[in-house]
Length: 361
Length: 72
Image (tube, rainbow over all chains, first blue to last red; front, side, top):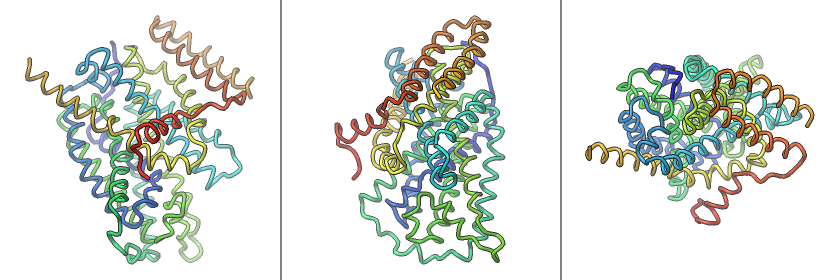
């Protein structure tokens, strides 16, 4: 199979990881209703639990340099079982793209353009993402530092402007979670932002320096966790218990900004940040979907599959959920359980089998 | 709306199929046509107003009602 070889540097990998986790930050607003003012704690515990998982992912891609997830599955599990597991992963990638697209469209529909049909945002957004995917991972990787930087700047500036509104007493009472809320919250953090790093098993084969993957991935995770905690602190300290009631706390927070009646209604900045971070996330997952389907059928190029998949994505985005409430219910209660085999069990099994194989030979 | 969709769909086909046949990528053409057909069927059914079940409904059934593993 002839491949278009595209290279990304290890620093671009950091930005891609930050981008993908930032993309989850704003869609995670339903965590506030579970973990309440202790969301920061759930995040830190989720981060600690994810660390060994991350080492597993990185050692898989280190053991098979230059191979992506589909090739690894075929090599480790054989032809039939490998293809079955690959189809499972394709279905997983295929689920995330419409879910995030739909969330973005609902966000626009609820908060910004109430009279415009959702489908308009879905079509425009999928068009942009499929364009980015057509240009290749190298282009997405090269534009990610700029986009990540923009969202860092917006967050930094808004925190400075919000300093007057913040009340640290909103964190009190601390540690008032029962064990179920704590486990569920931590599990959501592992499943949605952090576990999605498994998509980088499709991309790590494009990284120039294989030895740098581990360092870059860990740095990316650390920086993005800090970013998420800062966002949570911003929302909880300024809104307090009201955080639970909003569709998007980050959006409501910026409405509080009022500097001398001149600097007001800055919430449009949230929309910019939301767009660009979801764009990175959806593009990466779209790229992974298209690439893995092409790899499964051993096609020379993944680019011919972009148009049909984009149409399927648009169609699925309309189908996938009826409203935000249903989507949040599924994401909070069903989805974390569903992805346990995909994010945790299969990678560990792959690593064990790969080790045995190498010992046997 | 349906007419518009069919117009866009066939213009996409008219642009992309010659590119694939020029590269003589017959395996690619097969996979492409299967996915294109799937996309066409999905969209047309939605456009004429058929209520398709969401794939997430199936997942919810599998995890909550069959395996009893959900939170809450």
